[in-house]
Length: 110
Image (tube, rainbow, N blue to C red):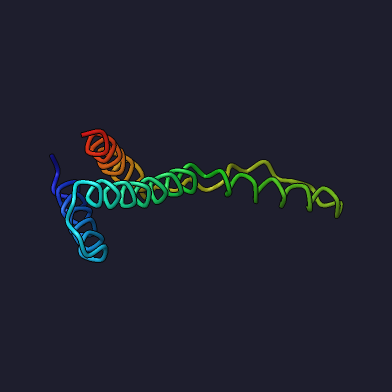
């Protein structure tokens, strides 16, 4: 397991512990609730990162720019759009969030 996964798991466990302390009682239910809340946070971050990383909004904006150029009468150039080379941590957050989600569901049914 790469270190970035380990650091993200540790951050998730620390956030879960913070939620348990905030609930002011340590029971299996509060641990499961805290894990579920943190897993939803990680899954939302991962899914938003996946959406933005896939370039959906970039394609949408370039389509609107082409439409505006066509309406104004300019000649459209068929140059390919810039490719983004930076990586997005979507998989990291999705894996950690999914793991915490499954763990919270298992704890909820104990």
